[in-house]
Length: 524
Image 1 (tube, rainbow, N blue to C red):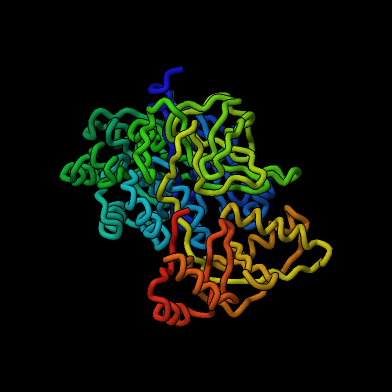
Image 2 (cartoon, rainbow, N blue to C red):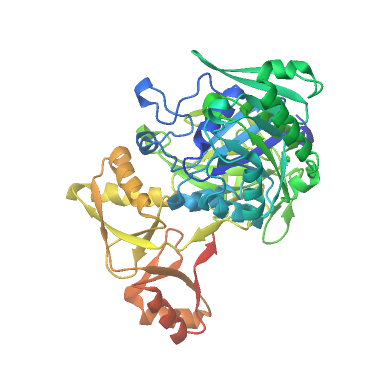
């Protein structure tokens, strides 16, 4: 197989949105149109016995939310697509931020009635740090919402990115009749029927064609003509501007009704960039290099609950993975024989025979692999830009069954490895402290401990309110640790962490120890 050909046909992207914009639903419909699944499960369709393919944790299926990134691969129009459905809830932002380091583009889903929301702004800020190309899908056109021009104005003003409409809605809500495919000059009709919605594509060579009125009526036809005249005065779609992160192509539709999704997917495959270069501490890695390189951006525990397995998600950045090849684990300095790397379709997994730049493979992990680790064929590299954030909420786990102490520690360690929360071991005493960005994380961990490890635990509040990783001259760090030993912890990566009652206590410490650096964020 040819490295260049296989690399150029890869498309690796993440789906981002504010909660409830329809992100997981559109993930399902992309998989449906991509042929990866035969039937799409509604996010809350438990009565019908279906769950979405991307929501595979029990807590996700119970609550109808995404709390963990799902990786899915499928083929479409000759391209190998790697799709990552990220958590929408802000409490799980760390997982999303790390995923965005592993993709080459992003699909931003907006609720047509709400426009740009707070979570979307935060995620776009992360995309902008890397100039990640972003495609926009305005969802829920079958409901009343913002005028499409107002929606694009909101995107441009709030996110500081130019919009280029690729499809255009004909009506909205109960008057929604379909979309106009601008590049192809075709009308795609939306027709509610007793059996669901049906896509019908009709070629209208000219908007003055009388047939258009016959399909949508004179009023809607006149409105469409006027809208398109105004669109003609806007800057057209520019591939270079899009790939530079300066312009976003905008599509309209209704994901839950399968409408407008095929147009989105077909265009996305054509315009999204293939795998790009990645930064390391010493050099940039190019995807067409012969030697294999890749980095771990996520750990997921219990994909197979019966075996309490852990899977390390590796983004391949260069070279060609072949089954049974040996890879150099840079952090440990050990060589590993990779016999059973995995390709994902949510819960479904297959053993990977070959993989290429842009692909996401899973490595079975028995505790030796961490987020941020690099794998190569011998070169010592460290990829940059994978973030960790100091938690803002802290809890102590209280075990309800004393005989489950070992299982509790095992569960907390494994769940913290995947980034569900952060586990801190004290230098003095035995009380493990769990830190998180949001309270929902503790609920999810409690649920997963019970469902996946058979451990029932409560999380009690503790009088702690701020954490920072520390660094500085060795003598100063030793002195600081000695004088603040009761407040010192090690995180899961064995980094020294200072945890105190308040931000005020942090400021006081920084004044007393000017040579110590207190880090709110760090690279893993």
